[in-house]
Length: 415
Image (cartoon, rainbow, N blue to C red):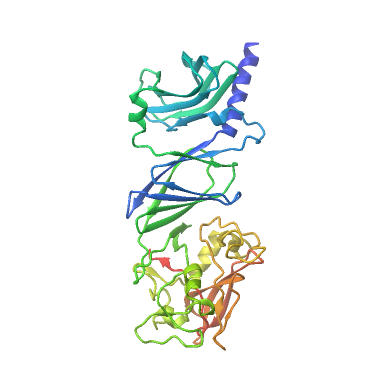
């Protein structure tokens, strides 16, 4: 009987781990260590949230998931992993004794306490837990909560759990902690996190498999008109995560010229299209009339117009021609035409279909259907390599086009 009980104790934690909710916190590094806001987008469900910098994102599995403890929503352990202390917060459905146990991986109970609790939310402060993985078990009259707790403490200390539900300790412990914000989550969901710190914005794609801290590396990406752009790190490269939108708009029937004014086209000559999709540029204007591959051109300081080789590196890091485009395209059909085939945006590149300006008649074509991006590499004296995304496939296409066409621009951070 003891052997059967022990086996059940091992099986139960396995189910709990599989259904364990995740707590995601955020920090910044690079040009700023302060995160002021976080935009969160679950690409599977389409749910988006905006958090304050100090908030904690609580990724909650839906109650319908097979093997999930239906009471697990009522237990939150934070921070987890813990260093010195952790809060254990749970719901008691009614008045009665509640037993709280800390159990290690061998099934040994390391700490046990019983408290008389009223119905409602209760918070206990756990401290003195030595390094290791434990399971918190809370049992009361007709209810049971379980969860995993990881301790990173390295010094032997006296384990203690105390009720702080109505005292000053809880307020003091939480004073530097933001709100806990819930989001439905199924293991394997792709989430796009955009961290914001003043003028800086950085995108981090992630598939969380446990509680963790997301670190945003903030880098300056500001053009000469003080427009600020989000950035994303893909492989060993850092890209702008939106299309360049810099310059003075001119009509599509005009040519962009070397006149000391950066000029741009806006699709159908409608200015607001630049706000959504960025500007469209002839190649010489992008390059500021240089032909040197990798030149800065009209990109922000410390950024440059990517070469054909650098686009090739991006394609390889995202799975090759047949897959890379889907992993780069913004999801949904707000900007892309239906069906926006295989768009996942798992890279965080957030590719947009800005269409293009045709050189022959100065007309505009294929907004919502395709996006075309210049490289800084000539294929001939009149043509340049470019890359493209389409609404009806997952390809990252490559081709050669005349320099007089008007295409979108994504800049690449200098090494």
